[in-house]
Length: 472
Image (cartoon, rainbow, N blue to C red):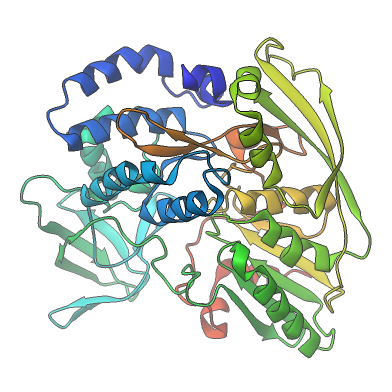
């Protein structure tokens, strides 16, 4: 069975996160799949089980945007690139991705979760009645937000999802379209202290992956601006491989224009879900180094994954971790306590990052991070933590870096669905398991939501930015 033989986190999800056992629930999921009446029913069941398996690290059904990238890569490399899936097999996967998207509805505004409370992430108005950005959602269909969430999970197919529901729960109003659902009766607490009740119409499909100017990398991925005479700010929305040289030049020009006056520099990577480790090292690490930085990582991989994966594909999963973070030594070590040596191989990797032409900056570097930072961005955060390059500020990261291997793709042979799943288990600098807890920042802050835009006026209102500005 793929999960038990290859996935590094399934047993840990049960023992450390308290999730149900994937083996114990398999018969029930098989029964549900065999009795599915429609493709929609089958998709929901397959997604539910895959979501339990992939509850830590990478673990998701590839959507249309991701599939397009993998398809182009497969065509370009002859299925010898990021995946080993031939291009003609992506058609079926696209069908399931579109069907999944059509299963949902979402509100006409972005929902921003702060702890257990929910707020509007942008202005919205209907029939001349305005709901300003930052309004708190008080009641949905007569229920508190917590009660509404519980109701959705109990009365829709989410009741068959044993693992976390991820973004569905985070966005509150991203719910399953069932029957003649039209929208929600909602009560908002406005910023001025008043309340307003409105009917909010539902829009079909999942919300945009990048709902605001602050998160949409297609609208200027790297933004540099001055917050004060001695404080610079750089917003990086995604680690986009083909933008690494453009963004590096932009940062270089910005810091050169400052004349070296900045005593603090903020790099804001909140909700940056990753991309390319080449971007990470070339743009955000190497130009800040005066000399080579050397650090070690410990990573575990299931033995059967190493033995049964095509050597060529295994090598490609190894090659995606940047040539500028040289692996100067790789040694197999004894598995961590509690890990069966018959099932696991652990490696200690010594990595050296070589400096590039240095940016004109000699002050203190601060990185704003949160639970939306994953994959290549997690790799960046891990490197910063180990080298002491910057002070990490915010919330723990997602926990989905690739220390020894990039995440792999898994194609279900009959249906054609394609998922991305974790391939290795990484150990944090403090000895904790990365995929279980992420990387903990040096300065932990309460969740305060995201800015809507990336401009000076908006950023100076942001509590996390203010924390850095007030740092002695």
